Amino acid sequence: MASSSLHAIELRHLRYFIAAAEHGSFRKAGAAIGVQQSALSRRIRDLEYHLGATLFLRHSGGVSLTFAGQRFLRRARQVVRNVGDGMQDIASIGRSEHGRVRIGIYSSIASGFLAELLHRYADRHPKVQIDLIDDNPGEHIAAIRRLRLDTAFMTGERDWPDCTTLPLWSERVFAVLPNDHSLAQRDEVQWDQLADEEFIVNESAPGQEVHDYLVQRLAAFGHHPQIRVQRVGRENLLPLVALSRGLTVVSEAMTAAQFPDIVYRPIFGEILPFSAVWSPKNDNPALSKLLDLARSLATARQTELVTQSVSWMKPRAGPSQSPDPLQ
Image: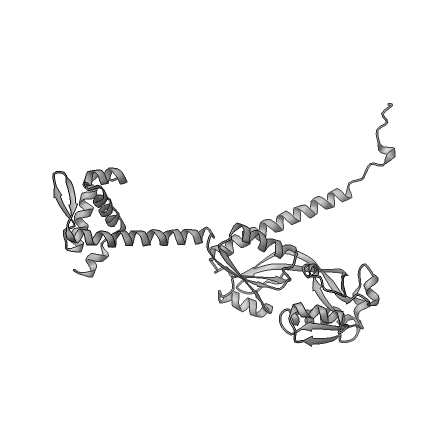
């Protein structure tokens, strides 16, 4: 049989054939699947022609399978089942019920916006695999452009070529101090109070970004800051602060992580914006759902902040403003 004949076989041919085999009648099969008997009969004749074999014996009481038809029925059911399973898998990926999303991070996921976003996303899409990758911004952007990373949540609102940027949230910046440091008793600290301090950063991400950030902020005080690189991960850097090996800075989300003998103090006026960055060529449905949720969460948080601000500004009634019950 020529391959062109096999290529002419459509999925509906197999479904009509299976229905006729199960009902033992073209008329009953057509009624069951909503197809006219004549149309079903023609399609089965087409199928027999393309296969080069008779599948049914026709008789007055209906139809019965030939030996070839019996052999073909098992294969036809397997093909239809596999196609159906494949369509369900693709549809579930399209609905983000399954799939994978690869996320580059800079901020801690101990608390804050990113922690809440990931928690909500995991609740709504429990079958989507979430991969988190710590790396430098340059590596994140390169991976996004090559579609090896779906998105990265990074500091700043910079426009990256060939990428889309969406500002989402901001975090305060905190100095990490030993609890016996002279500044530990203050509610907040200022950069000029930190200018003569020695700082430590970790070698891996986001160590280089923290290093550059400190240099930029402290250069205005006339000398290059003392910054030493420690070959430890982020989780071991803060215990070194407790050992008086130097100070460091973290974003607000990291302050949920508690370590003995250190304190977090906000740096006056220092706010760090965070944005999502992704490639417009990325058509991963799981990414689309994540970004939709991020937008929704950012809008809800902004609305909450505005509401709190308006509530705080409203004048509160004092005793003299209370209505006199005797009037």
